[in-house]
Amino acid sequence: MRRTLSVLFWILLGALSTSAGLGYFLMEANHDRARLGQEAADARAELAQTKTANETLAAEANKKVQEAAAEVARAQQILQRSLEENRLIASAVPLVKPDAKTLKGWAEVASIPLGVSLRVPKTAQSQQTDRAFVIQTAPSKHSAPVEQWLTISPYQATVEEELRRSLQNAETVVYKVADRVIVGTKGTWSSVSGTTYLIRVQKPGGVATHLIWAKTLPGVDETQILQTLATFSFAS
Image 1 (tube, rainbow, N blue to C red):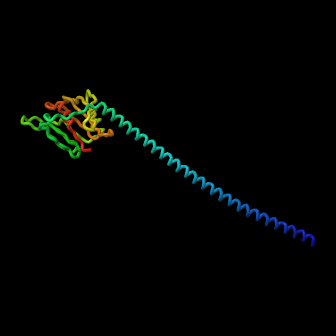
Image 2 (image 1 turned 135 degrees about the vertical axis):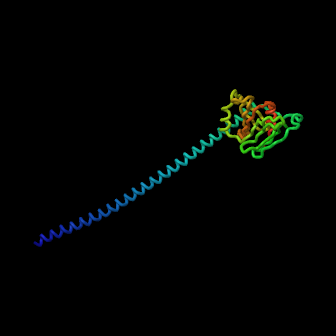
Image 3 (image 1 turned 45 degrees about the horizontal axis):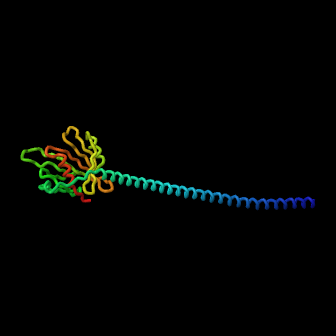
């Protein structure tokens, strides 16, 4: 009996030792699992940060590429305008201001909103409207109707294109007045007799500033229109 109890005692003691050993290893395993879990979480966080950083770098690089491409496009446009301007200047016909005898009696008129001044014959008068500076025939004692024969307005490409579509038998004209190039077309206007000019004023750099429309009338021929254009002066 005593021997049996002794054996049971040693068996129980061994079981307790084994349990203690297993408990220790289970605790270490839990610690390892927690540590590995934390390391995995840290690795995922680091990966996410790296991905975000890479995406940010990629976005910044793409932005710089787009900015560089836009800058190149602007430079090409400037170069193209410069080449076009040089071509126009080379082919432009200089408009020479009439001599003092011709200009005798011509009045100087100006448009402050448009920053232009010019000389007009004594048979003409000027009028500033909301949209344009108008040169028209002066009233006469014969009760002839007052007719516009030249208008100056701020340049608008859409307006120029719309008016050009109404011109027939159009041909390109290029003139030079002081440091400005005056370029456009002349032709015939639908259902209107005479010659019509549709031209734009370009300052150095190829930037269009004004749009000029002019037409011949009885007593206002192309020579007078060109003489009037030759007297133009621009504020800036």
